[in-house]
Image 1 (cartoon, rainbow over the protein chains, first blue to last red):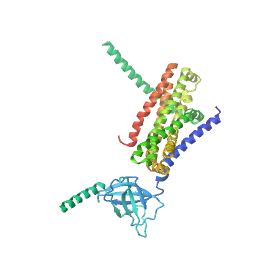
Image 2 (cartoon, helix red, strand yellow):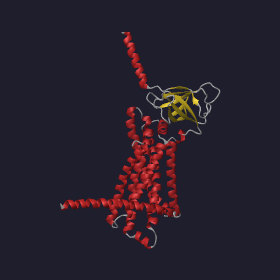
Image 3 (tube, each protein chain N blue to C red):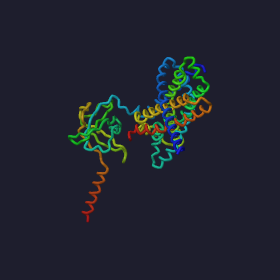
Image 4 (cartoon, rainbow over the protein chains, first blue to last red):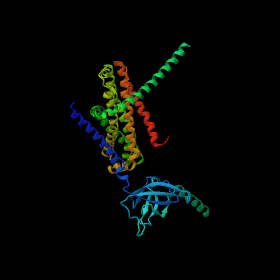
Length: 157
Length: 263
């Protein structure tokens, strides 16, 4: 076969393969959406993080603005320290922003929900959110419900 | 008594033969990799072979990818609809294709279509003494014949696997969204939510590269090591397909367990 035509075919093949890879990365995978662009890190301390995992979403008003980049345990205060990577486009979170661990749906994945405060100053790289609310652990809730239910029943008798 | 000794000796010979072949295959690989340096200047040899193992395999890969994706869409839908989770169809199709079916099925097809052709070609060259003829003319057959084919397989396999997965996702979309009425937005957004670039796509590409390496290595070695008769070439071709398929499936388990970090 002619050398030129052969090279053309191979070129087409390689280009199609690379195109397929790009489609997998951007259209099928999360490369286009998941990466936090020049993000900054803020921390939050929780008494209990429930089932929160690294890479979980960080949202404000339901919009995903970042993700959890690290979870460590503070042996001094017996608290979980959650480090969040927030997108650089959202630099105007007030310093009294509060963080809550929420669950998507009844049994869905857990994520961090941020609630804006009213301060004039904004959170910067490395700052810590002071107002936090722990995850609701379903088992504890059921336990409380069962004991209060039992107590109420014995009282009525 | 003598019969027992004889059968024991037979067993020993088979074992030693197998070990010997393994050693020859490793030395052969070393020589091929060393010869690959020369091909930087003579890259047209490689391009020719990429055409033979890549472009000519394209059609079977695309058609099978499309149908595998369509079947996944159909089967996934029928299972998911029981749990009212048919919106996750895109995720199911994409994950099974990118992680497993893309690399594995492509490697199996590649071994059957391109690997067997490589072995038959090289084996026939050996049987008709073309390789010996090259050596007589001071042309190293490993540089001229083997290394370009090996490199071409290495390049072609990941690209073929990516094409397989991509067209499979489109096939799943065709059946799921077009035929069964899953919402197109949910199909794609659930997929993008669940498929991670590093954990799923990069690992799939690594898998297909490893499979490409193993399949082409087996194919060119079996051809080069074939008994130079028509029967020997037939056996070598047969062995290529069997060994490639077995090693792909075994390696797939090992690689998956390493990537998931379960073992």
